[in-house]
Image 1 (cartoon, rainbow, N blue to C red):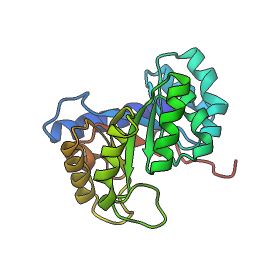
Image 2 (image 1 turned 45 degrees about the vertical axis):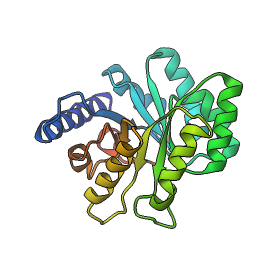
Image 3 (image 1 turned 135 degrees about the horizontal axis):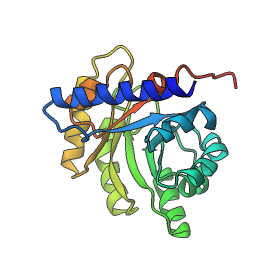
Length: 225
């Protein structure tokens, strides 16, 4: 089982490198966020042993159960929260994560600013944009995003590094990726977390700095646990 994770990880990294070259970008420009949600520490450790250091989790409680021990083994890892964050989990999220990719509303921005002040720890933040304006999906609406981004920078003074999006299933993702890139450029933000297993080559062509890939590395997730 260890070998399959490491083999799949190598395959994914090769595909990212090839997509970068096709897009005229340097190999190494795009970081792989290995999405480890629902997978236990024994499944994750082979990826760490193979040199992967950036991981993504959806839920604070799940991450809290497995990552402190893994961080003790591998202190130079980088943990991203890529799922919705409830305000009552902000204290734990600030303590645990290095990057919070799902900043999407004023109440959360305010809570994060206060908690960062208390803890003296400032994980980088990405604003999640609901690029397809889907009612069931988290993220600030594109029409509200510019004002919200400015408030995050100037009103709450958060360490804002970039933007994140998840395009609607079944749609051409490129317009969504391009919109996110243009929005980031307007605000001088460097990081673009966009692209998953099915669409990461298009995301890389549109300027992604981070792609989030899980199933292709770890296999199908067990949601019954």
